Length: 396
Image 1 (cartoon, helix red, strand yellow):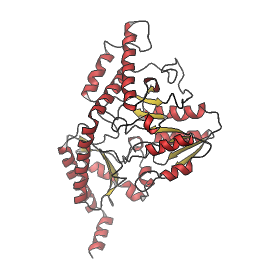
Image 2 (cartoon, helix red, strand yellow):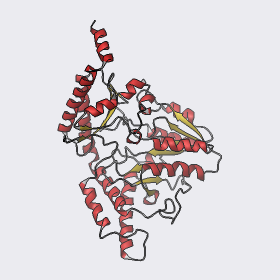
Image 3 (cartoon, helix red, strand yellow):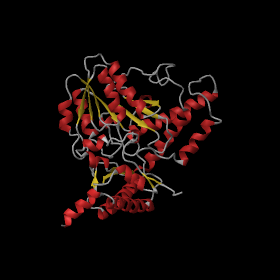
Image 4 (cartoon, one colour):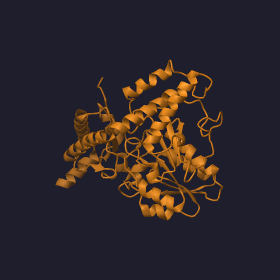
């Protein structure tokens, strides 16, 4: 069996051994319930949770009490959008978001529409970024929330969250950022940017699956959310349920590690990505890079190869594990809605693949991936009647 090189780090990341080592005692001898305040087992668990909370708060320039632990970014987004809308006085019933948001945001907004809320879905430009004029024009007197992700999960493109945060402050509108793909990988200062609510997950930063958090601003302004999960009043009443202490410890350690290594690691990952990009563009000059190269995560690249079907290409890659888009949408054969939002035809949207390097990849992985992708694309094109016809027309 061919050993596969994992290049799908936008979908999830392996748990770092140092993170696992930090977690292990909390599965065995340190198994206390963090809500048990009558004995040392509970005190020990509570202390571990609060230590992780402090690490995450420090990374965001936030206060520890503003960090609420959840099962992941999807739950956090649901709590943020539904909770904010349900806690409002009903005078503002308008939400602004963009068409390339993660399904966690889009599907939650659709649910709010069923409940009587109006949602404006902003288009993006050819480079995958939403224009500031579009955001400014969409915000109205009855707008309660602007929800714009920091980094897109498929194309890695970064949005202008600093400018959007400033606009929201000026208009007295709440600002939600889905930072699942950017938290830890890029510095985020919630005070400087003006973020009111932020969601992230542990498994995107070499931490465990099943844990994430929601940052909820507590001052200037204080954000009020209607709780979505009853039963015990955990997390200061924001999210009931026994805390997964081992997972939270892992999230804290993963945050600490990725922040410590960020600058050097980003430079290394950008080198791997650019090596792959240069090699593929040299061999396949008609390759389309989806989204802005300048404004994107350093480890991510998303290609389209005209006259090649993306799923067929993925099946052809024997030693490379990458994807055709979001892991949350990979069960459908429909072309990526993100690709179509860039203005691509359905055919070109179907020809895209996403490559995302990670902490445990190296130069050899980039070289192997480059060679295998080029060979696979050329092989599939040789079998394509449309490709052969286009070649004949070009040289006739």
